[in-house]
Image (cartoon, rainbow, N blue to C red):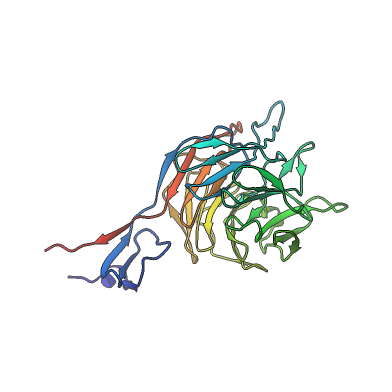
Length: 338
């Protein structure tokens, strides 16, 4: 009988515990349990729809305890932008309305933290729909104002797994007296004070917005971006480094997870793709496709998982209230027969 190595060109790895983010088809021997295991495919499932999410929403938390907020409620037309401050919470089954933000905003990157200790910042805000520097802190019930950013920003890449006291945001912005969108930098929040580190490494600089993100303040990941690109970078709390590219270009996309177990979904290229990418710390691979495409959606989730809702579902900029959840690959024990 042929061995696995002869068939696949790989040896079966011995692991004392199951890997935290296995890829489809990965085989290993769990030495603790004394069994051979294989990872199946992750799957998407429909969840209850939101009622007040928008285009350019921000979400934070896990797939069973999260919130979504912000966004615009209309596309081109009159008025061209109706920015909102609504907040909804998800408990794994249903969405319920919570208290509004203190500042209505849209396209503020993804949220950070948890359902009971969340953070959002920047974005386009009234009255002129311009970049803003305000910070919102959420405690699971109400919003308070955090320390203002030193830079006015929108469309950022944020530390989605960060906290209210250990968070970063990066991208393009402006400061009073400077030309619009000139500073390309990363700023970190320690709970009370913002400090600057280094900008993203990618070029051209206009792609440093409207992409997906994952990870924490010292283990961040940013991917995709304006214009639809395959760029992907990691952050160590000080500087950015290029990582292997996405399998397909993404722009206006969403992200979730960690630096070593991330998901990239949604966005716009020449249409609204349903293709989804997953990252395991060393490469991006294609995952199961979503049932419908969307751009500028709110997304969140723990390692290897994603909850995505809101965003635009077509060229008319109509809000997509539908919600989908991606569950990480199932692990199956391999048994032998005689």
